[in-house]
Image (cartoon, rainbow, N blue to C red; front, side, top):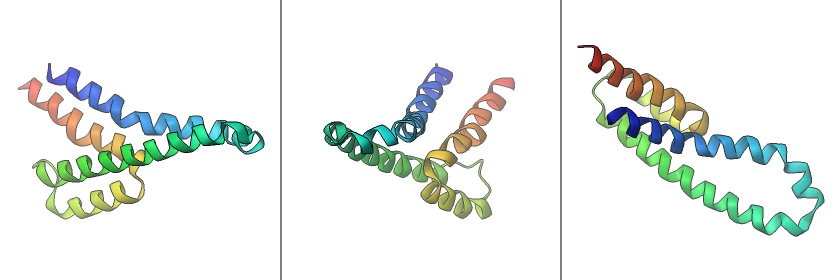
Length: 106
């Protein structure tokens, strides 16, 4: 059950990354056709709020988890703040998924 929740959390974490790649692929279309710009602008604001919420959740997890070395928590905080949609899947794998896998082995 915990693996399913972690997989769903990864899916939620990857949504902004997928949206980033989608938005960059259609960027020229958006700038050339201004009729759809308002629709994309609303989606951008929605994604900004979503990423902000994810950043807060990951910063909370960063300071709450015990399997992260204390001298690396500040580094992970900076990585989450500045490279958020790229560093959150790495954080998820290293500290949530791998930790859960090592607990299941014992």
